[in-house]
Length: 251
Length: 75
Image 1 (cartoon, rainbow over the protein chains, first blue to last red):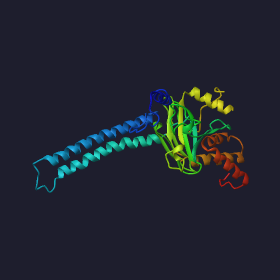
Image 2: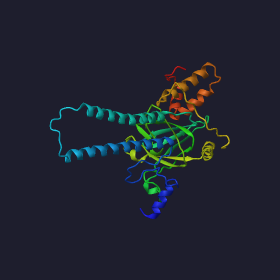
Image 3: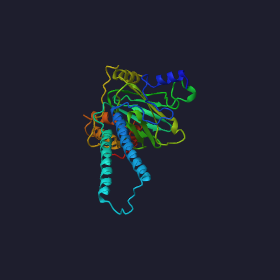
């Protein structure tokens, strides 16, 4: 990647240098774009911390057992140590399970949404509907931009022609369904991943905490072009959003 | 135009607390049309809710079914 491409890429990443899109050979999580995702990242780090403690301890035990000269040849049972090595892992599992459950239920909590967006998965594109505005509904399709039409710095297989524009600091309800087969609406930075099932409306929500462009992809194998139906969400200030939706409604 | 835009949507409905909101959309569509058939007044709330929740394609399908007399809901 040369410097020009790198610069273009930074611009594409919302000008702030946040990682709201996947990177080549990425191992970690993308940067959180909502408060819930921050909690999820923290939870991930907490589990990793426990994992390192356990791995180090077990490794130390193995090394000790293999290198020691003093082996108890007549050991048949040891109730005290057995109670200890049952209770400590049970305690550790509790410390993982409780915050996990808390997050799970928080993710389902939609609060009082200010805006409803409908995302419909098609073979192979997403279409979006904004219909909180009486009889006039804003409806559009969002197709991937083919590699041959990309500008310098655009993200390959991730850019779309029409982005989903949503206001930041606003509770947004997303209703997801499929028009033909199973799809899945997923945006890692916003902690959203929900199946799009034909005949069923699935509800999820997010509250974006900073302006930016958030990238996601269809995450349920849905046919030949499954890899080519990305999701792009543009988080903007409320005023910009009302201008944008106002312009579309008056068209 | 932006002054006229009111950012509000269907409120949380305790009858439908789950991820699956299919019935929420359906119930409000049915309630709106039974309300119109019964009195025709004060039905706007249901309309706002089902318009916010239901995909446009579902609504147009159900509208066609109502016209053809094949709609399965009791309205």
